[in-house]
Image (cartoon, rainbow, N blue to C red; front, side, top):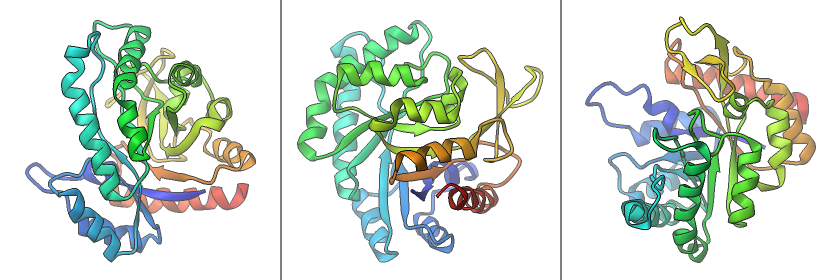
Length: 277
């Protein structure tokens, strides 16, 4: 197991009108002695520019994450999403990764089962494009209570329909469906090729920055180790299974700057990983 930088976390600190600094991201990644980055979109850069910059710093792309809305009931409505999917696959190849991840938020008007059918119907029509490019398509345990992919059971249903589909395991998000991080990992272990670590703290609905989740509980985002997610238990399950992939450090809170959170979060994760390995 190794920790990877996630551009999403760092981009949350951008001020209005400020552009993402890819070189600064690479320098910070090296300062933390990390060697891989999950590029969540490419911002204002051409993929080839990012690849060249990553090569300059001796970094690898762990995964390419991008939004691609396939949550529509007809192929015609999903057509724009198909084009985005294909461009995303092409971008992943240029970035030098064989893993992509599609965030799958829910949508009012569709139940979770309907949304899952929509997404999978869409993927069935385009996943051969990824297969031909040698790219593995993943979905993560997502937070929105209407998301089609939250629990480990959701993932099994998806893979039963599209066998080459794989999982980006999110230890924090899987708990919002009523599972522990360890249980969520163990139930999907053979299909997990990438991972995110974050934390949520259960709270009162009256608190600020609160979200309501599938399990009916309210939470707000905190730094890994400060919430209710069993970080150590999840890592122990991964170590026991022999997971050897990357784990993004992810932070969606507001108490710390993205840089401060990443420095401390990576430090904590390294301590936990040393304890379980």
